[in-house]
Picture (cartoon, rainbow, N blue to C red):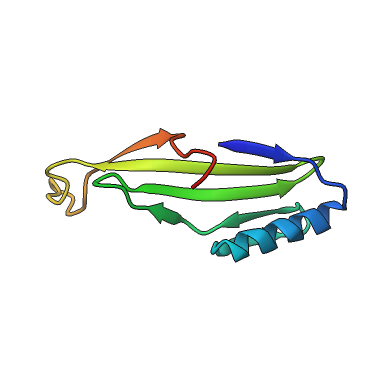
Length: 103
C-alpha cells in the first residue's frame, strides 16, 4: 500500500512530524536517516486466525511525503512444525496487499 501526502514545511520538518505521529500511534522506529530523509518502523504483527499479517512501514520525504506499507501473510501448513532434514519450520510466504486504509 502506498500513500502520498503534500506538505508545506521543509522535508526535515515533515519527516519529523510524521515520526512523532507514528510514535504516538505505538510504532517503534527502527532506522532514521536524516541525510536521505526516510525512516522505517519495526516489524509489527496483526494476528488473524491462523494467518498472521506481518508488516513494515517505510516513510520518506522528497517532493511529497510517501508512506509505504509492506505486508506479508505467512500461511502455516499442517506439517509446518516438522522440518524435513532441515530442523526448521516450513513456511509459505505470500506477498500481499491485504491491509486496508485502517490497520
